[in-house]
Length: 102
Ligand SMILES: [Zn+2]
Image (cartoon, rainbow, N blue to C red; front, side, top):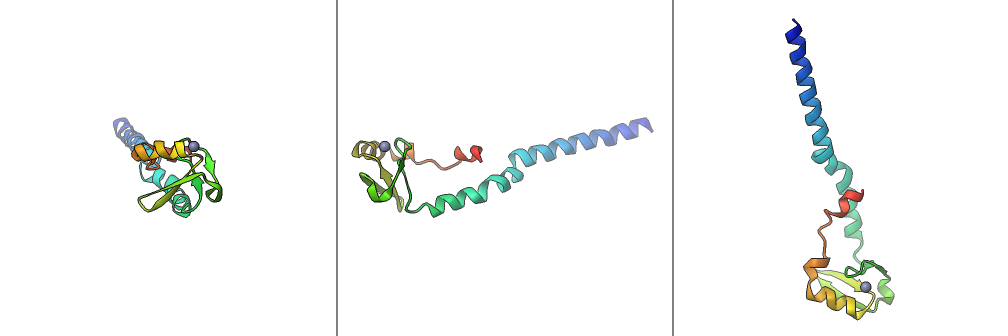
């Protein structure tokens, strides 16, 4: 009878661990981080952050702009835009990196 209760205890630990990992890295993490983040990105059609240097740029007063994949990017200077134009993939992030901050 002792072996029996040990077995069920072991199962509890295994399932507990699985659940923890799932919440932490799987579906749970998705539910916590995803929806809100995507909204912010979609709504930011006109707002500006210079992807080259990372500083916020007022679209109305941006020194330079570039359109990539239907999205407009604003830059604090022509130099930043040139950097971006040369290697856009380097500056356009998919968002997975920022998700950790949420
Ligand atoms: Zn810049």
